[in-house]
Length: 312
Image (cartoon, rainbow, N blue to C red; front, side, top):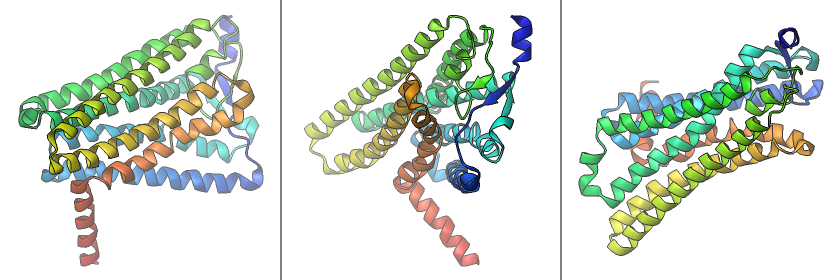
């Protein structure tokens, strides 16, 4: 089995079924989507890190989102664009590179849930305990929340992929546009039911935990807003919470589609498209939905553009 595993250390990525005539068009679309996501997310990080008016817990926690989006797009789109221009029979990747790609793919997916959870907690404290906000959401608390989101993501993904890489593989084709845990354990001819169950259970728990915690948070926020009858408070809650909820829904729907389609081979092409969209849609829409809808960030963007226009 060791010799068989060694021979199959070079894997073939199935990728997208794209005709030669349309390959350049698909490449251009992916390239534009990648550049838009990178520029918009890097711009948000730059603004928040350089503008002192944005140096508060809410915006520091928000920085976790564009950082994660940069990881999510970079881990698959550059290689996917290369594969689009290659012949199907030439889309090779080493097993080690595949594992590394799968690792960051799942860290990105897990961090999406946990980052939005800690951002929801920040909104809860700001609206439900405004007088205690500065004492609760200190710099130390921001670091703890951010570290817990990333630490839990790394821990769970390490365990999940650790269970997968222990399996010897007798196949050499990744039935996906990029590497992920399910594609890796499908390479094995041994019983991978533990890996499949762990992946499904973890996905359900992560999605369920984030959904339940965010739902409870918003119920408490809504209760406070209804009982207070404070128009200023209600307006603030609607603006900040609707933005956060929109980002969460985009992430949840995009992720749920390809996670469950992975278990149904008859929808393989739809699964492939869904998996790619999860790495394009949220990273592309998050800066627009969250960045431009946040008053402070929107004002800074307008000021920067006005200065550029004035100097030009």
